[in-house]
Length: 316
Length: 316
Image (tube, rainbow over all chains, first blue to last red; front, side):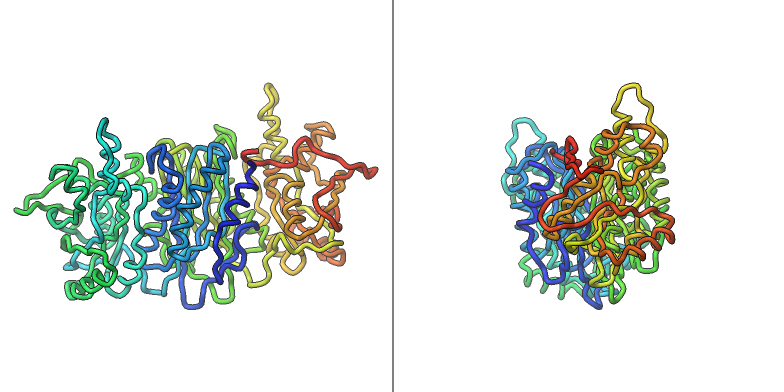
Protein backbone atom coordinates (compact mmCIF):
# COMPACT_ATOMS: atom_id res chain seq x y z
CA UNK A 1 0.00 0.00 0.00
CA UNK A 2 1.54 3.29 -1.12
CA UNK A 3 1.20 6.79 0.29
CA UNK A 4 -1.36 7.83 -2.31
CA UNK A 5 -3.58 4.89 -1.39
CA UNK A 6 -3.41 5.90 2.26
CA UNK A 7 -4.37 9.46 1.41
CA UNK A 8 -7.16 8.21 -0.85
CA UNK A 9 -8.36 6.00 2.01
CA UNK A 10 -8.51 9.06 4.25
CA UNK A 11 -10.07 11.30 1.60
CA UNK A 12 -12.94 8.91 0.95
CA UNK A 13 -14.03 9.10 4.57
CA UNK A 14 -13.55 12.84 5.19
CA UNK A 15 -16.79 14.75 5.73
CA UNK A 16 -17.76 17.91 3.88
CA UNK A 17 -18.62 21.35 5.19
CA UNK A 18 -20.11 24.24 3.26
CA UNK A 19 -17.19 26.53 4.08
CA UNK A 20 -14.62 24.09 2.66
CA UNK A 21 -13.92 25.35 -0.86
CA UNK A 22 -11.34 22.64 -1.54
CA UNK A 23 -10.49 19.74 0.79
CA UNK A 24 -8.02 16.84 0.63
CA UNK A 25 -6.29 16.30 -2.71
CA UNK A 26 -4.53 19.50 -3.76
CA UNK A 27 -1.40 21.29 -2.53
CA UNK A 28 -3.43 23.13 0.10
CA UNK A 29 -6.99 23.26 1.37
CA UNK A 30 -9.08 26.35 0.65
CA UNK A 31 -11.34 27.52 3.47
CA UNK A 32 -13.81 30.33 3.99
CA UNK A 33 -13.76 32.19 7.31
CA UNK A 34 -17.14 33.89 7.72
CA UNK A 35 -17.22 37.68 8.10
CA UNK A 36 -17.05 38.85 11.68
CA UNK A 37 -15.10 35.83 12.92
CA UNK A 38 -11.48 35.39 13.83
CA UNK A 39 -9.55 32.19 13.32
CA UNK A 40 -8.31 30.15 16.32
CA UNK A 41 -5.49 27.71 15.51
CA UNK A 42 -3.96 25.05 17.73
CA UNK A 43 -1.52 22.22 16.99
CA UNK A 44 -0.60 19.21 19.11
CA UNK A 45 1.37 16.07 18.47
CA UNK A 46 1.03 12.65 20.08
CA UNK A 47 4.07 10.37 19.94
CA UNK A 48 3.79 6.63 20.64
CA UNK A 49 5.27 5.68 24.01
CA UNK A 50 5.30 9.32 25.12
CA UNK A 51 1.71 10.53 24.87
CA UNK A 52 -0.01 7.17 24.77
CA UNK A 53 1.14 3.69 25.81
CA UNK A 54 2.49 1.48 23.04
CA UNK A 55 -0.27 -0.89 22.06
CA UNK A 56 -3.08 1.63 22.52
CA UNK A 57 -5.94 0.75 20.17
CA UNK A 58 -5.73 2.61 16.86
CA UNK A 59 -9.23 4.05 17.31
CA UNK A 60 -8.25 5.45 20.70
CA UNK A 61 -5.12 7.07 19.24
CA UNK A 62 -7.28 8.67 16.55
CA UNK A 63 -9.84 9.92 19.05
CA UNK A 64 -7.24 11.29 21.43
CA UNK A 65 -5.18 13.04 18.74
CA UNK A 66 -8.18 15.12 17.77
CA UNK A 67 -9.53 15.43 21.32
CA UNK A 68 -6.43 17.11 22.75
CA UNK A 69 -6.57 19.64 19.91
CA UNK A 70 -10.30 20.32 20.27
CA UNK A 71 -9.62 20.79 23.97
CA UNK A 72 -7.35 23.72 23.07
CA UNK A 73 -10.14 25.31 21.03
CA UNK A 74 -12.55 24.68 23.91
CA UNK A 75 -10.19 26.52 26.25
CA UNK A 76 -10.39 29.55 23.94
CA UNK A 77 -14.17 29.41 23.60
CA UNK A 78 -13.84 28.79 19.85
CA UNK A 79 -16.20 26.80 17.64
CA UNK A 80 -14.32 23.95 15.89
CA UNK A 81 -14.40 24.01 12.08
CA UNK A 82 -11.54 22.24 10.27
CA UNK A 83 -8.47 20.13 10.93
CA UNK A 84 -5.41 18.80 9.15
CA UNK A 85 -3.65 15.56 10.02
CA UNK A 86 -0.05 14.50 9.58
CA UNK A 87 0.40 10.81 10.26
CA UNK A 88 3.80 9.13 10.53
CA UNK A 89 3.61 5.35 10.37
CA UNK A 90 6.40 2.76 10.57
CA UNK A 91 4.73 0.92 7.71
CA UNK A 92 1.58 1.35 5.63
CA UNK A 93 -1.02 -0.61 7.59
CA UNK A 94 -4.53 -0.26 6.15
CA UNK A 95 -6.24 -1.98 9.10
CA UNK A 96 -4.51 0.30 11.60
CA UNK A 97 -5.37 3.36 9.52
CA UNK A 98 -9.01 2.33 9.28
CA UNK A 99 -9.18 1.88 13.05
CA UNK A 100 -7.45 5.21 13.59
CA UNK A 101 -9.96 6.92 11.33
CA UNK A 102 -12.86 5.27 13.18
CA UNK A 103 -11.89 7.08 16.36
CA UNK A 104 -10.68 10.29 14.75
CA UNK A 105 -13.71 10.76 12.51
CA UNK A 106 -16.22 9.74 15.20
CA UNK A 107 -15.08 12.70 17.29
CA UNK A 108 -14.78 14.94 14.23
CA UNK A 109 -18.38 14.20 13.27
CA UNK A 110 -19.59 14.91 16.81
CA UNK A 111 -18.15 18.43 16.51
CA UNK A 112 -18.81 18.97 12.80
CA UNK A 113 -15.07 19.23 12.11
CA UNK A 114 -13.99 18.64 8.51
CA UNK A 115 -10.63 16.95 7.86
CA UNK A 116 -9.28 19.03 4.97
CA UNK A 117 -5.65 18.05 4.44
CA UNK A 118 -2.30 16.92 5.78
CA UNK A 119 0.14 14.21 4.80
CA UNK A 120 1.23 10.67 5.53
CA UNK A 121 4.90 9.86 5.98
CA UNK A 122 7.08 6.98 6.97
CA UNK A 123 8.56 7.23 10.45
CA UNK A 124 8.03 6.26 14.09
CA UNK A 125 4.30 6.32 14.97
CA UNK A 126 3.36 9.95 15.53
CA UNK A 127 0.18 11.93 14.98
CA UNK A 128 0.23 15.68 14.49
CA UNK A 129 -3.05 17.57 14.21
CA UNK A 130 -3.80 21.22 13.55
CA UNK A 131 -7.32 22.40 14.37
CA UNK A 132 -9.01 25.55 13.20
CA UNK A 133 -11.88 27.17 15.02
CA UNK A 134 -13.96 30.30 14.68
CA UNK A 135 -14.38 32.91 17.37
CA UNK A 136 -16.16 36.24 17.69
CA UNK A 137 -13.54 39.02 17.92
CA UNK A 138 -12.78 40.02 21.50
CA UNK A 139 -14.62 37.10 23.08
CA UNK A 140 -11.83 34.50 23.34
CA UNK A 141 -11.06 33.03 26.79
CA UNK A 142 -7.41 33.95 27.20
CA UNK A 143 -4.93 32.95 29.88
CA UNK A 144 -4.18 36.57 30.71
CA UNK A 145 -7.70 37.69 31.66
CA UNK A 146 -7.91 36.51 35.30
CA UNK A 147 -8.43 39.18 37.98
CA UNK A 148 -7.64 39.15 41.70
CA UNK A 149 -10.68 37.91 43.60
CA UNK A 150 -11.91 35.57 40.87
CA UNK A 151 -13.18 32.15 41.82
CA UNK A 152 -11.28 29.24 40.24
CA UNK A 153 -13.40 26.49 38.71
CA UNK A 154 -12.77 23.16 37.03
CA UNK A 155 -15.05 20.92 35.00
CA UNK A 156 -15.64 17.17 35.36
CA UNK A 157 -13.25 15.18 37.55
CA UNK A 158 -9.47 15.26 37.82
CA UNK A 159 -6.81 12.57 38.01
CA UNK A 160 -8.61 9.75 36.22
CA UNK A 161 -6.28 9.56 33.19
CA UNK A 162 -3.19 9.81 35.38
CA UNK A 163 -4.67 7.13 37.62
CA UNK A 164 -5.06 4.81 34.66
CA UNK A 165 -1.46 5.45 33.63
CA UNK A 166 -0.27 4.78 37.18
CA UNK A 167 -2.10 1.44 37.23
CA UNK A 168 -0.80 0.58 33.78
CA UNK A 169 2.78 1.23 34.92
CA UNK A 170 2.41 -0.92 38.06
CA UNK A 171 3.25 -4.58 37.68
CA UNK A 172 0.36 -6.90 38.42
CA UNK A 173 -2.30 -4.22 38.83
CA UNK A 174 -5.26 -4.22 36.49
CA UNK A 175 -6.32 -0.94 34.94
CA UNK A 176 -9.81 0.18 35.97
CA UNK A 177 -11.87 0.41 32.73
CA UNK A 178 -13.50 3.70 33.74
CA UNK A 179 -10.10 5.28 34.35
CA UNK A 180 -8.67 3.78 31.18
CA UNK A 181 -11.53 5.25 29.18
CA UNK A 182 -10.67 8.69 30.50
CA UNK A 183 -7.03 8.20 29.46
CA UNK A 184 -7.85 6.90 25.97
CA UNK A 185 -10.96 8.91 25.14
CA UNK A 186 -10.80 12.34 26.79
CA UNK A 187 -13.83 14.56 26.22
CA UNK A 188 -12.99 18.01 24.89
CA UNK A 189 -15.26 20.48 26.70
CA UNK A 190 -16.23 22.40 23.58
CA UNK A 191 -19.80 23.32 24.57
CA UNK A 192 -18.58 24.50 27.98
CA UNK A 193 -15.89 26.71 26.40
CA UNK A 194 -18.43 28.29 24.06
CA UNK A 195 -20.85 28.90 26.94
CA UNK A 196 -18.16 30.51 29.11
CA UNK A 197 -17.67 33.44 26.70
CA UNK A 198 -18.79 36.52 28.58
CA UNK A 199 -18.78 34.63 31.91
CA UNK A 200 -15.20 33.46 32.52
CA UNK A 201 -12.28 35.88 32.78
CA UNK A 202 -9.64 33.31 31.80
CA UNK A 203 -9.47 29.63 30.88
CA UNK A 204 -7.00 26.86 30.11
CA UNK A 205 -7.38 23.15 29.51
CA UNK A 206 -5.80 20.77 31.99
CA UNK A 207 -3.25 18.80 30.01
CA UNK A 208 -0.03 19.09 32.02
CA UNK A 209 -1.71 18.93 35.44
CA UNK A 210 -3.96 21.35 37.30
CA UNK A 211 -1.25 23.13 39.29
CA UNK A 212 1.00 23.57 36.26
CA UNK A 213 -1.78 24.73 33.97
CA UNK A 214 -3.36 27.08 36.49
CA UNK A 215 0.19 28.35 37.00
CA UNK A 216 0.24 29.43 33.34
CA UNK A 217 -2.95 31.42 33.91
CA UNK A 218 -1.42 33.04 37.00
CA UNK A 219 1.78 33.95 35.17
CA UNK A 220 -0.07 35.37 32.16
CA UNK A 221 -2.50 37.30 34.38
CA UNK A 222 0.11 38.49 36.90
CA UNK A 223 -1.47 37.02 40.03
CA UNK A 224 -1.51 33.94 42.28
CA UNK A 225 -4.08 31.25 43.06
CA UNK A 226 -5.01 29.19 46.12
CA UNK A 227 -6.53 25.75 45.61
CA UNK A 228 -8.39 23.68 48.21
CA UNK A 229 -7.31 20.10 47.74
CA UNK A 230 -10.52 18.71 49.24
CA UNK A 231 -12.55 20.63 46.65
CA UNK A 232 -10.88 18.93 43.66
CA UNK A 233 -13.57 16.83 41.96
CA UNK A 234 -12.90 13.10 42.20
CA UNK A 235 -14.53 10.22 40.36
CA UNK A 236 -15.78 7.19 42.25
CA UNK A 237 -13.33 5.03 40.30
CA UNK A 238 -10.35 7.14 41.35
CA UNK A 239 -11.46 7.27 44.98
CA UNK A 240 -11.78 3.49 45.02
CA UNK A 241 -8.40 2.86 43.47
CA UNK A 242 -5.93 5.02 45.40
CA UNK A 243 -5.21 6.27 48.92
CA UNK A 244 -5.84 9.92 49.67
CA UNK A 245 -2.30 11.14 49.19
CA UNK A 246 -1.76 9.38 45.87
CA UNK A 247 -5.17 10.53 44.67
CA UNK A 248 -4.38 14.14 45.54
CA UNK A 249 -1.15 14.01 43.54
CA UNK A 250 -2.96 12.52 40.55
CA UNK A 251 -5.69 15.15 40.72
CA UNK A 252 -3.45 18.14 41.29
CA UNK A 253 -0.50 17.22 39.11
CA UNK A 254 -1.31 14.19 36.98
CA UNK A 255 -2.41 15.81 33.78
CA UNK A 256 -4.07 14.43 30.64
CA UNK A 257 -7.49 15.43 32.05
CA UNK A 258 -8.60 17.78 29.25
CA UNK A 259 -11.03 19.43 31.62
CA UNK A 260 -11.33 23.22 31.57
CA UNK A 261 -9.97 25.25 34.45
CA UNK A 262 -11.32 28.80 34.44
CA UNK A 263 -11.64 31.85 36.61
CA UNK A 264 -14.76 33.98 36.98
CA UNK A 265 -15.97 36.77 39.24
CA UNK A 266 -17.90 35.74 42.37
CA UNK A 267 -21.16 37.14 40.96
CA UNK A 268 -21.01 34.63 38.09
CA UNK A 269 -21.50 31.65 40.44
CA UNK A 270 -25.24 31.35 39.81
CA UNK A 271 -24.76 31.49 36.03
CA UNK A 272 -22.05 28.82 36.26
CA UNK A 273 -24.29 26.64 38.39
CA UNK A 274 -27.03 26.94 35.77
CA UNK A 275 -24.50 26.08 33.06
CA UNK A 276 -23.48 22.92 34.89
CA UNK A 277 -27.08 21.80 35.00
CA UNK A 278 -27.74 22.72 31.36
CA UNK A 279 -24.65 20.82 30.15
CA UNK A 280 -25.07 17.98 32.67
CA UNK A 281 -21.40 18.54 33.49
CA UNK A 282 -20.21 19.06 37.09
CA UNK A 283 -18.41 22.38 37.58
CA UNK A 284 -16.55 22.63 40.88
CA UNK A 285 -15.36 25.77 42.59
CA UNK A 286 -11.86 24.82 43.76
CA UNK A 287 -10.20 28.05 44.88
CA UNK A 288 -9.58 31.72 44.26
CA UNK A 289 -7.11 34.11 42.72
CA UNK A 290 -5.12 36.40 45.02
CA UNK A 291 -2.31 38.90 44.68
CA UNK A 292 1.18 37.50 44.22
CA UNK A 293 2.60 34.75 42.05
CA UNK A 294 2.32 30.97 41.81
CA UNK A 295 -0.27 28.39 42.85
CA UNK A 296 -0.67 27.16 46.43
CA UNK A 297 -2.55 23.95 47.19
CA UNK A 298 -4.02 23.85 50.70
CA UNK A 299 -5.36 21.00 52.83
CA UNK A 300 -8.56 21.39 54.86
CA UNK A 301 -6.71 22.96 57.81
CA UNK A 302 -4.94 25.44 55.53
CA UNK A 303 -1.59 23.61 55.45
CA UNK A 304 0.30 24.07 52.18
CA UNK A 305 0.73 20.86 50.25
CA UNK A 306 3.30 20.04 47.56
CA UNK A 307 3.05 17.19 45.08
CA UNK A 308 6.16 15.19 44.26
CA UNK A 309 6.19 16.96 40.90
CA UNK A 310 4.36 20.08 39.75
CA UNK A 311 3.06 18.80 36.43
CA UNK A 312 3.85 16.84 33.36
CA UNK A 313 6.73 18.24 31.39
CA UNK A 314 8.35 16.74 28.35
CA UNK A 315 12.10 16.93 28.77
CA UNK A 316 11.36 17.27 32.53
CA UNK B 1 15.91 22.51 29.90
CA UNK B 2 12.17 21.93 30.15
CA UNK B 3 9.43 22.18 27.55
CA UNK B 4 8.31 25.62 28.71
CA UNK B 5 11.85 26.96 28.30
CA UNK B 6 11.96 25.62 24.75
CA UNK B 7 8.64 27.28 23.94
CA UNK B 8 9.81 30.50 25.56
CA UNK B 9 13.00 30.31 23.49
CA UNK B 10 10.86 30.04 20.35
CA UNK B 11 8.40 32.72 21.45
CA UNK B 12 11.11 35.30 22.05
CA UNK B 13 12.27 35.03 18.44
CA UNK B 14 8.89 34.86 16.68
CA UNK B 15 8.08 37.90 14.58
CA UNK B 16 4.86 39.88 14.81
CA UNK B 17 2.25 40.63 12.16
CA UNK B 18 -0.63 43.08 12.40
CA UNK B 19 -3.21 40.39 11.69
CA UNK B 20 -1.99 38.19 14.58
CA UNK B 21 -4.37 38.97 17.44
CA UNK B 22 -2.67 36.48 19.78
CA UNK B 23 0.47 34.51 19.01
CA UNK B 24 2.49 31.88 20.91
CA UNK B 25 1.60 31.42 24.58
CA UNK B 26 -2.10 30.56 24.87
CA UNK B 27 -4.14 27.46 24.06
CA UNK B 28 -4.59 28.65 20.46
CA UNK B 29 -3.46 31.50 18.26
CA UNK B 30 -6.02 34.09 17.17
CA UNK B 31 -5.72 35.33 13.59
CA UNK B 32 -7.56 37.78 11.41
CA UNK B 33 -8.32 36.78 7.80
CA UNK B 34 -8.94 40.00 5.85
CA UNK B 35 -12.31 40.43 4.13
CA UNK B 36 -12.40 39.13 0.57
CA UNK B 37 -9.72 36.49 1.14
CA UNK B 38 -9.93 32.76 1.54
CA UNK B 39 -7.60 30.73 3.71
CA UNK B 40 -5.14 28.26 2.15
CA UNK B 41 -3.80 25.63 4.57
CA UNK B 42 -1.05 23.07 4.00
CA UNK B 43 0.73 20.71 6.41
CA UNK B 44 3.92 18.73 5.87
CA UNK B 45 6.16 16.71 8.16
CA UNK B 46 9.87 16.00 7.84
CA UNK B 47 11.20 12.94 9.69
CA UNK B 48 14.92 12.47 10.33
CA UNK B 49 16.43 9.78 8.12
CA UNK B 50 13.39 9.82 5.82
CA UNK B 51 13.06 13.39 4.56
CA UNK B 52 16.56 14.58 5.35
CA UNK B 53 19.78 12.67 6.03
CA UNK B 54 20.69 12.15 9.69
CA UNK B 55 23.28 14.74 10.59
CA UNK B 56 21.77 17.49 8.45
CA UNK B 57 22.60 20.86 10.01
CA UNK B 58 19.85 22.10 12.34
CA UNK B 59 19.51 25.36 10.40
CA UNK B 60 18.98 23.42 7.17
CA UNK B 61 16.29 21.26 8.79
CA UNK B 62 14.56 24.44 9.97
CA UNK B 63 14.75 26.06 6.55
CA UNK B 64 13.54 22.99 4.72
CA UNK B 65 10.64 22.28 7.09
CA UNK B 66 9.17 25.67 6.32
CA UNK B 67 10.24 25.69 2.65
CA UNK B 68 8.35 22.53 1.71
CA UNK B 69 5.21 23.99 3.26
CA UNK B 70 5.60 27.40 1.60
CA UNK B 71 6.08 25.51 -1.64
CA UNK B 72 2.55 24.12 -1.24
CA UNK B 73 1.16 27.62 -0.82
CA UNK B 74 3.18 28.74 -3.86
CA UNK B 75 1.60 25.96 -5.90
CA UNK B 76 -1.83 27.37 -5.00
CA UNK B 77 -0.89 30.97 -5.75
CA UNK B 78 -1.48 31.93 -2.11
CA UNK B 79 0.29 34.63 -0.13
CA UNK B 80 1.95 33.16 3.01
CA UNK B 81 0.79 34.62 6.32
CA UNK B 82 1.21 32.40 9.41
CA UNK B 83 2.60 29.05 10.47
CA UNK B 84 2.55 26.68 13.43
CA UNK B 85 5.37 24.32 14.34
CA UNK B 86 5.34 21.00 16.17
CA UNK B 87 8.84 19.87 17.02
CA UNK B 88 9.66 16.41 18.40
CA UNK B 89 13.16 16.14 19.82
CA UNK B 90 14.94 13.16 21.40
CA UNK B 91 16.20 15.52 24.11
CA UNK B 92 15.94 19.21 24.88
CA UNK B 93 18.94 20.67 23.08
CA UNK B 94 19.06 24.47 23.20
CA UNK B 95 21.94 24.76 20.71
CA UNK B 96 20.15 22.55 18.18
CA UNK B 97 16.92 24.50 18.66
CA UNK B 98 18.68 27.83 18.17
CA UNK B 99 20.25 26.57 14.95
CA UNK B 100 16.92 25.20 13.78
CA UNK B 101 15.27 28.57 14.43
CA UNK B 102 18.06 30.36 12.54
CA UNK B 103 17.09 28.56 9.35
CA UNK B 104 13.35 28.44 9.97
CA UNK B 105 12.98 32.10 10.90
CA UNK B 106 15.33 33.32 8.15
CA UNK B 107 12.95 31.91 5.58
CA UNK B 108 9.89 33.02 7.57
CA UNK B 109 11.18 36.60 7.62
CA UNK B 110 11.84 36.53 3.88
CA UNK B 111 8.17 35.76 3.30
CA UNK B 112 6.74 37.78 6.22
CA UNK B 113 5.39 34.61 7.81
CA UNK B 114 4.60 34.82 11.53
CA UNK B 115 5.15 31.73 13.70
CA UNK B 116 2.05 31.79 15.91
CA UNK B 117 1.91 28.49 17.79
CA UNK B 118 2.56 24.78 17.99
CA UNK B 119 4.17 22.51 20.55
CA UNK B 120 7.39 20.77 21.51
CA UNK B 121 7.37 17.12 22.48
CA UNK B 122 9.81 14.35 23.27
CA UNK B 123 10.23 11.80 20.51
CA UNK B 124 12.33 10.86 17.50
CA UNK B 125 13.44 14.00 15.61
CA UNK B 126 10.47 15.14 13.54
CA UNK B 127 9.26 18.52 12.37
CA UNK B 128 5.64 19.15 11.48
CA UNK B 129 4.60 22.53 10.08
CA UNK B 130 1.21 23.92 9.13
CA UNK B 131 1.22 27.04 6.95
CA UNK B 132 -1.63 29.43 6.36
CA UNK B 133 -1.88 31.64 3.31
CA UNK B 134 -4.37 34.09 1.90
CA UNK B 135 -5.89 33.84 -1.55
CA UNK B 136 -8.44 35.81 -3.55
CA UNK B 137 -11.60 33.65 -4.00
CA UNK B 138 -11.65 31.82 -7.32
CA UNK B 139 -8.03 32.57 -8.20
CA UNK B 140 -6.23 29.56 -6.68
CA UNK B 141 -4.05 27.41 -8.96
CA UNK B 142 -5.67 24.04 -8.59
CA UNK B 143 -4.58 20.64 -9.89
CA UNK B 144 -7.86 20.12 -11.69
CA UNK B 145 -7.74 23.19 -13.97
CA UNK B 146 -5.53 21.92 -16.83
CA UNK B 147 -7.10 21.79 -20.32
CA UNK B 148 -6.15 19.73 -23.34
CA UNK B 149 -3.71 21.71 -25.49
CA UNK B 150 -2.03 23.50 -22.58
CA UNK B 151 1.72 23.88 -22.58
CA UNK B 152 3.46 22.32 -19.56
CA UNK B 153 6.08 24.46 -17.85
CA UNK B 154 8.50 24.04 -14.98
CA UNK B 155 10.51 26.59 -13.03
CA UNK B 156 14.24 26.52 -12.22
CA UNK B 157 16.15 23.27 -12.70
CA UNK B 158 15.21 19.67 -11.86
CA UNK B 159 17.11 16.81 -10.29
CA UNK B 160 19.62 18.74 -8.20
CA UNK B 161 18.34 17.66 -4.78
CA UNK B 162 17.99 14.04 -5.91
CA UNK B 163 21.51 14.25 -7.36
CA UNK B 164 22.88 15.37 -4.01
CA UNK B 165 21.10 12.51 -2.26
CA UNK B 166 22.46 10.06 -4.82
CA UNK B 167 26.01 11.28 -4.22
CA UNK B 168 25.47 11.21 -0.45
CA UNK B 169 24.33 7.58 -0.64
CA UNK B 170 27.33 6.52 -2.76
CA UNK B 171 30.37 5.42 -0.82
CA UNK B 172 33.44 7.54 -1.45
CA UNK B 173 31.74 10.16 -3.59
CA UNK B 174 31.80 13.77 -2.39
CA UNK B 175 28.55 15.71 -2.55
CA UNK B 176 28.68 18.69 -4.88
CA UNK B 177 28.03 21.78 -2.70
CA UNK B 178 25.69 23.37 -5.27
CA UNK B 179 23.56 20.21 -5.38
CA UNK B 180 23.67 19.81 -1.62
CA UNK B 181 22.44 23.38 -1.21
CA UNK B 182 19.43 22.54 -3.37
CA UNK B 183 18.69 19.50 -1.19
CA UNK B 184 19.06 21.34 2.11
CA UNK B 185 17.73 24.77 1.20
CA UNK B 186 15.02 24.50 -1.46
CA UNK B 187 13.53 27.78 -2.64
CA UNK B 188 9.75 27.94 -2.45
CA UNK B 189 8.54 29.71 -5.60
CA UNK B 190 6.09 31.96 -3.82
CA UNK B 191 6.41 35.03 -6.07
CA UNK B 192 6.00 32.83 -9.15
CA UNK B 193 2.87 31.21 -7.77
CA UNK B 194 1.34 34.59 -7.00
CA UNK B 195 2.21 35.87 -10.50
CA UNK B 196 0.70 32.82 -12.20
CA UNK B 197 -2.83 33.62 -10.96
CA UNK B 198 -4.85 34.40 -14.06
CA UNK B 199 -2.14 32.93 -16.33
CA UNK B 200 -1.76 29.25 -15.42
CA UNK B 201 -4.63 26.78 -15.65
CA UNK B 202 -3.18 24.35 -13.08
CA UNK B 203 -0.10 24.05 -10.90
CA UNK B 204 1.64 21.67 -8.49
CA UNK B 205 4.97 21.77 -6.72
CA UNK B 206 7.52 19.10 -7.61
CA UNK B 207 8.14 17.19 -4.41
CA UNK B 208 7.66 13.53 -5.35
CA UNK B 209 9.25 13.83 -8.81
CA UNK B 210 8.10 15.57 -11.99
CA UNK B 211 6.36 12.58 -13.59
CA UNK B 212 4.51 11.64 -10.41
CA UNK B 213 3.45 15.19 -9.61
CA UNK B 214 2.41 16.04 -13.15
CA UNK B 215 0.53 12.75 -13.03
CA UNK B 216 -1.56 14.15 -10.16
CA UNK B 217 -2.46 17.15 -12.32
CA UNK B 218 -3.42 14.85 -15.19
CA UNK B 219 -5.59 12.66 -12.97
CA UNK B 220 -7.32 15.64 -11.35
CA UNK B 221 -7.86 17.33 -14.73
CA UNK B 222 -8.86 14.18 -16.63
CA UNK B 223 -6.18 14.35 -19.33
CA UNK B 224 -2.67 13.17 -20.22
CA UNK B 225 0.69 14.90 -20.68
CA UNK B 226 3.72 14.41 -22.91
CA UNK B 227 7.10 15.55 -21.66
CA UNK B 228 10.23 16.07 -23.78
CA UNK B 229 13.12 14.76 -21.74
CA UNK B 230 15.63 17.02 -23.51
CA UNK B 231 13.60 20.06 -22.52
CA UNK B 232 13.89 19.39 -18.78
CA UNK B 233 15.98 22.19 -17.28
CA UNK B 234 19.35 21.01 -15.97
CA UNK B 235 21.86 22.79 -13.77
CA UNK B 236 25.53 22.89 -14.72
CA UNK B 237 26.34 21.03 -11.49
CA UNK B 238 23.97 18.18 -12.32
CA UNK B 239 25.20 17.92 -15.90
CA UNK B 240 28.80 17.72 -14.68
CA UNK B 241 28.08 15.06 -12.07
CA UNK B 242 26.06 12.37 -13.86
CA UNK B 243 25.77 10.61 -17.20
CA UNK B 244 22.76 11.41 -19.34
CA UNK B 245 20.60 8.48 -18.32
CA UNK B 246 21.13 8.92 -14.59
CA UNK B 247 20.55 12.63 -14.95
CA UNK B 248 17.28 12.06 -16.79
CA UNK B 249 16.02 9.78 -14.03
CA UNK B 250 16.95 12.34 -11.38
CA UNK B 251 15.23 15.13 -13.28
CA UNK B 252 12.09 13.24 -14.22
CA UNK B 253 11.58 11.18 -11.08
CA UNK B 254 13.99 12.30 -8.36
CA UNK B 255 11.78 14.68 -6.45
CA UNK B 256 12.54 17.14 -3.63
CA UNK B 257 12.88 19.94 -6.23
CA UNK B 258 10.15 22.27 -4.93
CA UNK B 259 9.92 23.89 -8.34
CA UNK B 260 6.50 24.68 -9.75
CA UNK B 261 5.12 22.65 -12.63
CA UNK B 262 2.18 24.39 -14.29
CA UNK B 263 0.07 24.29 -17.41
CA UNK B 264 -1.02 27.32 -19.41
CA UNK B 265 -2.64 28.00 -22.77
CA UNK B 266 -0.29 28.55 -25.72
CA UNK B 267 -1.22 32.23 -25.92
CA UNK B 268 0.23 32.79 -22.45
CA UNK B 269 3.80 32.04 -23.60
CA UNK B 270 4.79 35.68 -24.01
CA UNK B 271 3.45 36.59 -20.60
CA UNK B 272 5.30 33.65 -19.06
CA UNK B 273 8.51 34.69 -20.78
CA UNK B 274 8.12 38.20 -19.38
CA UNK B 275 7.50 36.71 -15.94
CA UNK B 276 10.70 34.69 -16.13
CA UNK B 277 12.67 37.87 -16.86
CA UNK B 278 10.90 39.88 -14.16
CA UNK B 279 11.52 37.22 -11.52
CA UNK B 280 15.00 36.33 -12.85
CA UNK B 281 13.83 32.71 -12.72
CA UNK B 282 14.11 30.37 -15.71
CA UNK B 283 10.76 28.96 -16.84
CA UNK B 284 11.06 26.09 -19.30
CA UNK B 285 8.37 24.79 -21.60
CA UNK B 286 8.73 21.02 -21.28
CA UNK B 287 5.67 19.50 -22.93
CA UNK B 288 1.96 19.63 -23.51
CA UNK B 289 -1.33 18.21 -22.30
CA UNK B 290 -3.25 15.84 -24.56
CA UNK B 291 -6.34 13.70 -24.35
CA UNK B 292 -6.04 10.45 -22.44
CA UNK B 293 -4.49 9.55 -19.12
CA UNK B 294 -1.01 9.41 -17.60
CA UNK B 295 2.31 11.09 -18.36
CA UNK B 296 4.60 10.01 -21.21
CA UNK B 297 8.26 11.05 -21.24
CA UNK B 298 9.74 11.15 -24.76
CA UNK B 299 13.32 11.25 -26.00
CA UNK B 300 14.35 13.54 -28.88
CA UNK B 301 13.29 10.97 -31.52
CA UNK B 302 9.90 10.46 -29.85
CA UNK B 303 10.77 7.18 -28.16
CA UNK B 304 8.91 6.64 -24.87
CA UNK B 305 11.19 6.51 -21.86
CA UNK B 306 10.54 4.99 -18.45
CA UNK B 307 12.50 5.71 -15.29
CA UNK B 308 13.31 2.86 -12.92
CA UNK B 309 10.67 4.28 -10.57
CA UNK B 310 7.98 6.84 -11.21
CA UNK B 311 8.51 9.05 -8.20
CA UNK B 312 9.23 9.17 -4.55
CA UNK B 313 6.63 7.39 -2.44
CA UNK B 314 6.69 6.78 1.24
CA UNK B 315 5.69 3.19 1.95
CA UNK B 316 6.59 2.53 -1.73
